[in-house]
Amino acid sequence: MTENTPQPLVEGITAAIVGVTDFGPHLDFFAGRLGYQVAGEGVVPAAVAGTLWGSGAADVEVVALAAAGAGTGRIHLVRVPDPVAPAEAPHNLDVGLVGIDMYARDIEAAHAELGRAGHTWATPPTTYGVAVGEREVEVTQGVCPAPDGTVVVFVQPAAVRGTEAWAADPDRPYTELTSVVCHVPDPDAEIVFWGPDGLGMAVWYDVVFSSPGFDKVAGLPDGTRMRLAFLAGEKTARIEVTSAAGGHRVDRRAAQRPARSLGHSGWSVRTRDLPAALESVRRTGGRVLSGPVETDDPLHGRAVVASADTPNGVSVTLWQPRG
Image 1 (cartoon, rainbow, N blue to C red):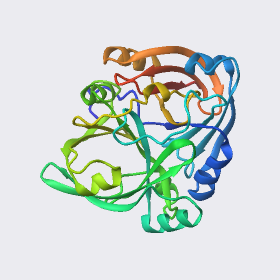
Image 2: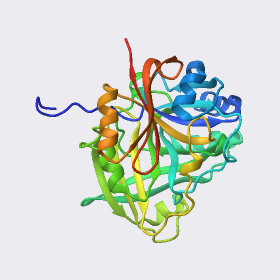
Image 3: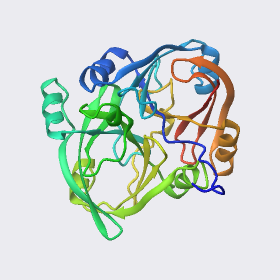
């Protein structure tokens, strides 16, 4: 970064927000099976949660999960007593949020161990190629549903892209979240919103490809042409913006609201400058929904927080720590 290059407003996706009916099954899966630790638990006060998420007049119970103490790529579990829709895993062609991804050191071992524990994979480990420019990148991944309709994608990377969890504990089987996935009708707008001219993430690649292996692992019709833009900040989690030509199905965005919906329902993003981030949201076609509001809670610590939608209606909680 040169002296004339603006400092990015965000470093990546700090956490995926996951709505739960009961913390127990999620703690069994993410902590008991995948080795995440509880980094914070308690409530987001009603005044804050109601302002941010429209969750009503009650405190919202939350648990923050981290892998090997990683400060980003976390999972924010939010209990939803009265969800707006039943739990249902989104399809890769549905509009809205799809999966949450993490690296697995040995994906075949993960498949066997989680299967023995009663977690049946929707798609077993599959290897396929993605054309990136003049080269083909080989990807091995599988899909294992978590509770409340949460889609977890395990990836065994051909080349590891830095993760805080593996830097802290190289022997652990799984990392923090390495990416979060959305399937949107206007990928160009989403890329501008998050990219160098918006909140400051870099576009690592932006490709259109078709792969029989990917069709299989993603449950797509044969020959589907998928656009995939991969945006990265200084830290995980990264963003996978996807769009399939003529292939959008159920629009799940109205049923993907933090503290009101089950499963993958939003993103939590730490910023170094909340007023500037909110101005960027407005300038790049997003909507500021509420805030800023002061809080001191298990998900954000002492911070000022606001809620926004991206141009494609993905829910984002933006927050800036206070000293």
